[in-house]
Length: 259
Image: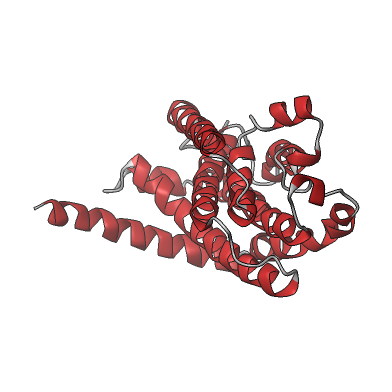
């Protein structure tokens, strides 16, 4: 009985996700940003990373680069792309029309976000293999932490995108409203520069940023240097940010154009 009850939901989500993926494929600029930026940016920061004393912190260039690539996927393949998608669908009255059908609010949000999240997941796998081959990153020493970090980062990035879209007036301004989180996360969440090499006080503050726990778990997946207490702290911090983001989306998400 429960299977029958859930079947229509899964079918509706697949249909909406398929339609959203088709629309995403027609937006060439969005596709290029989502696919090429996360793949190319890690190599642009590599010269700076090689200047850091990584061995003192138990890190390698390969582990830092694969973490950077996956972190860039969170920001550009999921977060930035979805802010534009949510705003565009809202301004074109797509979200308003969807709410008049059988789809519930959660189904609409999940269905819209699903293609970008799946692309981000596939990109994380490609980056992991590529860095293992090209940068000698090797296989994850604690794969369960890497998987946990990737999944939590993708979900939180999607939730933050929905929240950011609530404060974005037009599709053209989506890149501007998404920029603060992108910059702060690149610098402070350990994506471009590992937080392990920062001063202790600054690192403690940066560890509380939204994407910091997910990035830390991903990096720990390759290094294996994260105790049970630290893993629990990262998971709880990510969970807290996700609950807060979901609550804020329920409170402030806009389904109709801003006037």
